[in-house]
Image 1 (spheres, rainbow, N blue to C red):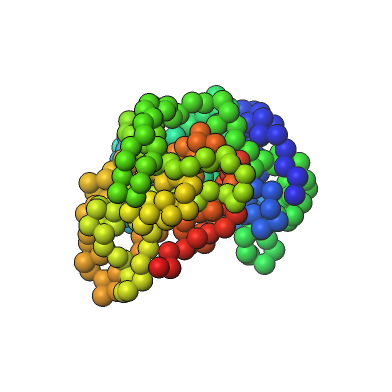
Image 2: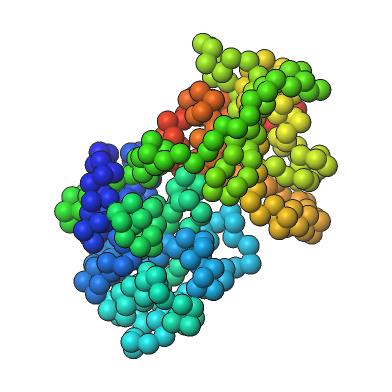
Length: 367
């Protein structure tokens, strides 16, 4: 599947047009229609509803969701699509479901002077809270819609709707490409958007590098300041990561007190990688990197982890899907890693190619 330059997609968004976005160039990639919310009108929303047939949503940056007092649809969705309560314009709509009514709501939510009292809940538009700093932080379509609108010089609020095939299932790869061609829409990829942002924006700064002695042997500690969340991420490196041979071992994880400090296991008898085990495995191999990501809302997440661990008869392991993306992927690139053997259960990390990274092997913990 051939996609166009991400600049063509940005130009289309700038002109108030609809574009098609896929995850990557693989034939199993899903796709969405995207456009700037401040350009939404009756015709464009009617086209989305008639031709794409998915749920019409709007991506909103986290800060904007807080300003509009949009609470989460469910108490904790940090590892899922983060829907907020549905919304409607308080004034100027009738049933709210018509294309014209939904366009009005979208324009309202994109306007900088809109306040919480201008909206009511529930409604027929479904906001998705996009991660701070967009696709660099989380490789999702809501983040991409916001990024594309911002890069196009419009309000950083994007409309998105999944494309369904004739059977009502999510269209994929070639079917999406055919859809874009049939309707004369530019086709871009999430991976290219990530790559574009990495090449044009500096979001992490290496602030310290020092050789240290650990109980697992000598490691090189590299610290990175994250300018978005004002936090410090750490990388523990051993050996020459650019040496020929098998790709180095890599583990990327958010630091978790229960797993990494108290050494608790999250499933009856089954064990998982934590910081200590990962460092020991890297030391045994003589080459690899452990990346420890700071968690912006660590205090709340610690309480959630404790509740999850204590409440289940057979506690489940924490899920780390997509944690490779964002800050972790930028750190791996800075360390010179392009191919890796990832210490993790097998996870289909979306848009990984946008960071020019490749997982050659998943290495589960089986000791």
